[in-house]
Length: 232
Length: 406
Image (cartoon, rainbow over all chains, first blue to last red; front, side, top):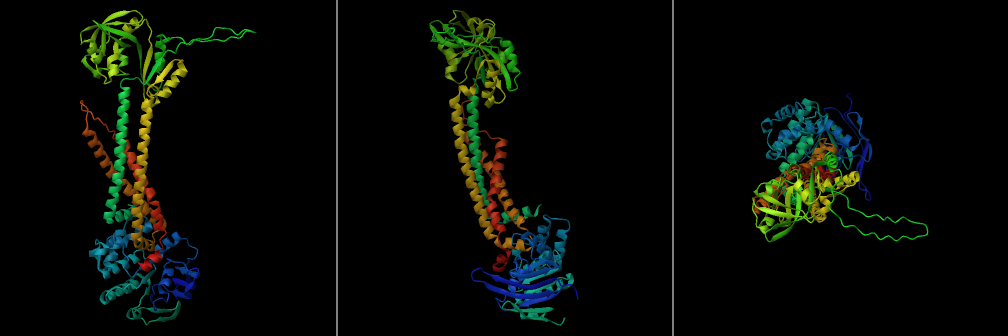
């Protein structure tokens, strides 16, 4: 069995100082490289909190998170930012592209932030990803001029541009119609296989969960079930 | 292009209305600064030029006569000396050719001219006027005060018996070029001079009193054979005149007066004018800074989602800070260019409103590259400083919050 990409050990998270609300209770979890995992559960079960912790956007109250073999507990904010840029890609529900920039610039943005300026081959790399998601002809369109499904596909290309081993997707099909949603999901599945990238997809959609390699179900801040689907 | 500049410029470009509004605001502010500086600078320059147009920067003369008590203190005898201040007579600077060479060799001195000045009467027929006789060498005096362009009739010729006098005196005496005038001095000497030229320096008192003659003629008339009464100097930096005068007194023991000492009222006026102008400019800078800061604060709030996305993609805190600092600096820089255009246009328009008979502006403006550079630097630094608080606010945004509540 391969070395796990993500390891969570006894992770808890509480919010508030006077009235303490514990959102996560002792989560232990391992995610393998290139694994395509769905995270399901009712609202308020702690899915988004878990995703933020995994995304290094927030810190656990107790417990450890190891990403790509590295303990993230003691990192400073800037180290977390840099590490996040290298290791993680994000796809958000509201496809969060930067509206001031074109599709191509949005895809290039993580490379620009990491290197500090445009370097050789960045543009080509972003273009080839846009081609892969079928939007090469929209490269110079402003983000706001694209449809919801197209924006979400651009967001996926952006998440992949630095070849992160893990992409976190928070309801990536949540506000798309069924057809666009299916297209986006197909794309996620395809790039996961082609780029050997692990995906953790938060979703409410049972149909989508059923098509993932593995389904984690959360209830009340605990992982209730962890099932592996038969490979389709 | 650095990532921060790329993002900052795009943010500014996309926030069109806000960007244009604040650019106009900075433009008006910088315009006021440029206009005010150009106007005050121009006025002061022309005031000083006008004052120094008829004055040497430093005038060196022999020290005043002093009287010392001759009574020797004696034992058992109280001496109560009463010293009477002597009447000052016209005296020559002792060893003036050497002194002149010494003064010319001083590093700050640009030119020096020996002159003989004294009181005299100008007579013609029944008219007589008290005048100030000024004996000069045309070649050296031209470097101190250039009279040639102010001559309105004849030419500036002072040799032999040729003399040049002011046009008010000429009309008082009823003379024109080619006429003769008798000059008498308290020393009892008298000489007939020939009017070779008539000047107008724009100051009535001087037009009525100055009579230029040759050095030799003045020496004879004032009974100062071979001597000179004053050495007039021009220095490189006009505001160094007082210091140069002090040095000359210290080195030669002669009395040296700078134009600054002789025109203290003017200097006090100029100084308070500058002070009020600085004050206005300071408050304009404060207003511009507040304007930039408030636009950027609004922009941070509007762009909190984008900032969150940038952070989630691995943008570091320092980079976020710089994105907003660059926006402030770019606003200041671009606004200052607008302001320089406004201020320069306003200055020249104002200068063209009123002109003197000779075509020069009544309100001259002093627009210079230095002023532009100064205004640009002030506006850019103001923009940068004004952006600090908004930038820190942007940097402190929590990406998790932003993304969760998008």
